[in-house]
Image 1 (cartoon, rainbow, N blue to C red):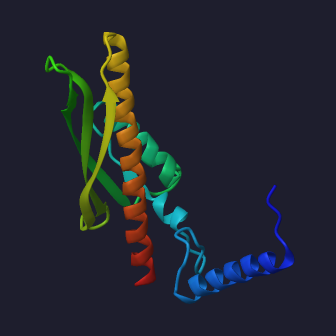
Image 2 (cartoon, helix red, strand yellow; image 1 turned 180 degrees about the vertical axis):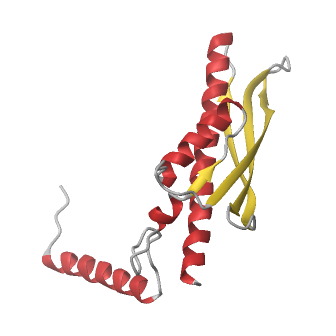
Amino acid sequence: MFYLNNTHKFKIFFSLFLVVSLVSNCGFQPLYFVKDGVNLSSIESQIEVKNIDGRTGQILRNSLLEKFGSESSNTKTLSLKITLTKSVVPLAFRRDKTVTRFNVIIDADYILKNLSNGKILTDGTSSSIASYSVVFSEFANLSAARDAEERAVIDISKNISRIVGFYLINLEDNK
């Protein structure tokens, strides 16, 4: 069993204190910090996420609505439009040249607009890659491919919500 004596405890405490004080002095501020009565959650709840084509598009939209705190009673002042493109690339082969593993690559082009004036606030592309193995069961292959698509789309939703959040909080700071 590992035992810490008082000297080790003091060193650990002092190190943590030093790290916390340095981080707080460098201007670090949590993304969801409430400042002047405004926080990112209240701004994000004003985003209308447009419908996205396909099954993976619906998964992405639902994930973003969950992350943005979709409240139907809120007036939507921002619009997020996303277009998905998917490609499946063979990754590994057997000696007989049959594919044993695939990469699913999903790219999401997004545009955040102000609904009142139609101005594009920010746009960009977020990409994610997920892999799956091929087995002899066709049902297992379809299930693995869907799971890989879903994992990639969930990753994209995290990226887009983070990027949009950074943009919106910086926009509020500059007002």
